[in-house]
Length: 193
Ligand code: GRF
Image (tube, rainbow, N blue to C red; front, side, top):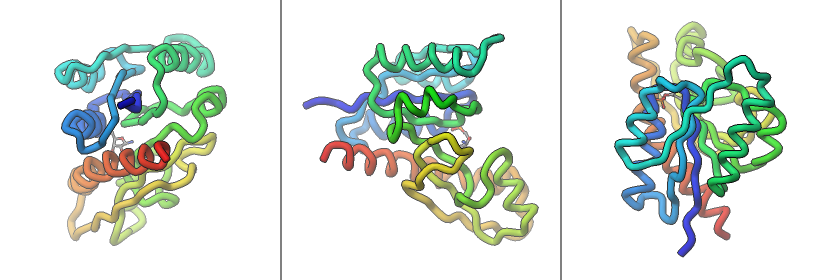
């Protein structure tokens, strides 16, 4: 039985990464193995959580390099690890064209809004500022556009009276942790056909 080898890219807390690792390790995502977690931030708390779950980690900092050069090092690691699907999970960098070309159709991201509404930074604040009654989260394929690639799955989350960015973000995050593993499972099932 061959396993899909998943690579996860993070920059911070890594709670979506944990949801994906736990789902793969418990068999909720069949035939999937998280083979590497890469962070552009050496101090990302998510790196410790990955190691606690026996996942190999590596920090690849951008330093003073051009985006392309940084991405080239990441692509080389992903290739060396024979990764066939990449999940961005709170990875706070825009991928270069070289990166999206190298793994076209095989990079997923999760975004805390119902895209195409509220792309980019602070989507929960955007939802509150616009007076939205409903927001949510989206798993989509990553291409050259900012949060604009084809949508794989979405989940609605209500905005309630008196919500703050913190309370809305926390409610959406619960939905993210359910949606991302489900979406990954769907994508892998389609790939296996
Ligand atoms: C999540 O809200 C995700 O949707 C967004 O960044 C946040 C990352 O949180 N892209 P975590 O690192 O997964 O805890």
